[in-house]
Amino acid sequence: MFGASGDLAYQQIFPALQQMILRGNLNVPVIGVAKSGWTLEQLRARARESLTQHGGLNEEAFSKLIAQLQYIDGAYEDPATFESLRQALGDAQLPTHYLAIPPSLFGAVVESLGKSRCARNARVIVEKPFGRDLDSARKLNETLHTVFPESAIFRIDHFLGKEAVENLYFFRFYNTFLEPIWNRNYVESVQITMAETFGIKGRGHVYEETGAIRDVVQNHLLQVVALLAMEPPTGLHAEALHDEQAKVFEMIPPIEAANTVRGQFLGYHDEPGVAADSTVETFAAVRLQIDSWRWQGVPFLIRAGKCLPVDATEVLVRLKKPPVGKLIPEGNYFRFRLGPELALSLGAQVKLPGPELVSMPVELSAVRRDRTEGMAAYERLLTDAMRGDAMLFVREDAVEEAWKMVDPVVGQATPLHIYSPGSWGPPEAERLAQDIGGWDNPRAAS
Ligand code: NDP
Image (cartoon, rainbow, N blue to C red; front, side):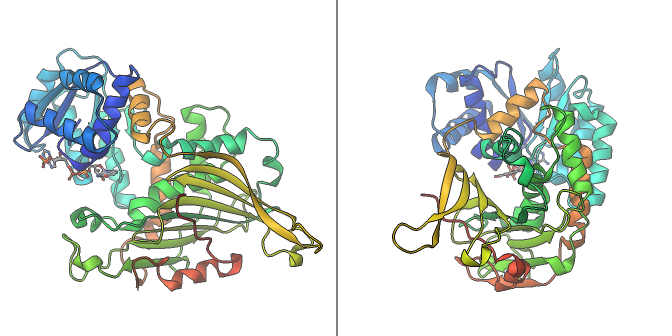
């Protein structure tokens, strides 16, 4: 685990490792690597603190985890670090290298893994973001392939490990009633909102390098688009699913500047690590189209932002109104709540009780689950990678196609609009949704 002293390890990885031990899915040494000048005892203390803060300590599983934990202190620029790793690996079979490190170091660490022979029969898990644009993603793929075959590369998009996101697949392909209407003839529009109430949590140095489009649109939210729009895969396995994901992306033209609105919350410049004149976006709204038979003419809208009124990730699929449409304010819709809790609901019309012959909206709930149910995304993904199951990871072609889509609108390609914290982003974003009845603002978690 490269990056053992980092924030991701603290927030997500140690809790995932403890859970894997609890389920009997981790019985191999875990070697942490970082350059903090720590001892093994310090890493163990950090793991304890991480579990106390995130998810809770289970003394029995934790004692197993710290017995399996080893630590190598050293910089990634120093060949001696990889020599120590080589020795620590001994004759280990199928080692899995997890790069939970700043993305600028991915390439160098992969090359050193190759040179030091640590990559022999090994797998590599690469954190997001995978590149900064199409060009850098291609170069990173090339570097990875000089050392690892594609089948040994696991590109993380932790959204794909979320129970709620996987549920989209099941809802779509395990229900007969959905298929006849899941197309341009019945679907009017699709919108996806990822709203966060918090800002950048003091991590300006990281966020300044990304911005909302690179941080969540290029990866998480386009993956959701793929699941919503794909054709049925030939089977529930990695290649079949990845083929369909890639096909969806190939059919989405690059996003146009006119279909993009970028925003920045008022006060972003006061965050530590943020440049006084930064034009990095903390909000992005884009509108795209999918040039397939199924989706021709159906607008897909994506919106993501920080310091918005609620914490919620939601998909709203609006269906066209029936012929009595003028009598009802809204038609049917599907609402997929992907976080913080999971819910799949259908918006329908019923008669308003009483003498008047008018309808009223109701929401039928197919499933509603608390956020604590199911496996956490990182546990799921690390367990799968250790088993060599790449289904919930992103294949080379999909990652490059996703960059092709967003490349024209990353960075300063479009104007930046300032918005007030606690609002739904800059009013300019309304323009993108004007002809589809406006954005649907998700409710706060109940
Ligand atoms: P941090 O900056 O918190 O941690 C980086 C880690 O890499 C530290 O352990 C650091 O060691 C180590 N490191 C950095 N440079 C070197 C070097 N030259 N030699 C040896 N070790 C080095 O980053 P995060 O943990 O936040 O992020 C890691 C990855 O995970 C990134 O790709 C990020 O995009 C991704 N990610 C992070 C999320 C999060 O919530 N934090 C969420 C999703 C993805 P030291 O502390 O000793 O400097």
